[in-house]
Length: 204
Image 1: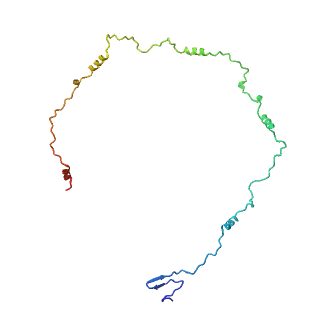
Image 2 (image 1 turned 180 degrees about the vertical axis):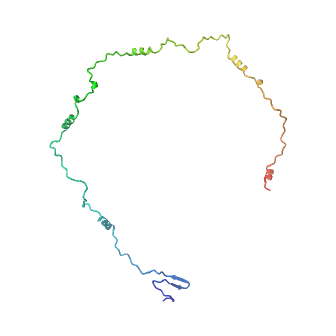
Image 3 (image 1 turned 135 degrees about the horizontal axis):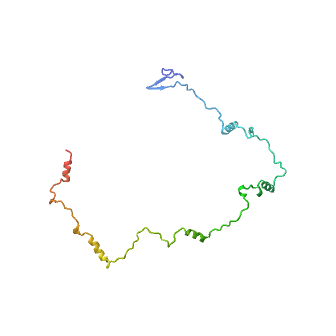
């Protein structure tokens, strides 16, 4: 009993001290204890994990067929000369090749033809082209002309005068009729000044 209120370890209660209230939990708040376990060290963990795998001296049964072999029991191995003779026997000789029947046509003979020389070939091809003195009829109109029969050819000055006569002078150009425009006059209007425009545009 404390201040007219009973306090138990399993029942929540309130104790009034002045104007404050202190709330107690209904949990069992008995004292605990430190952890007394002995955890494994790093070396002990390695020993523990290594014990789950087989060691190097523990060999699993192999799935390979490892029946024993044997060394070469040949009394006399072939030498390099023996190998050359063995390979030579596998290659056919010159008389063992089969010839084609089409080649069996009796003995041949040398060519008795007389080929053309370089000069003869040039003569042969030259006969197919017209010679320089054989002129084909031209399709152009080659009627005879004549020399200039003018007694006195024009000089440079004559040509300048001739060209100048063919150009129109200033009075030869045709002018279009201009419209009848009466005399004008200066502007008598009195434009507004900047201040007057500001007064006009000013809001009422």
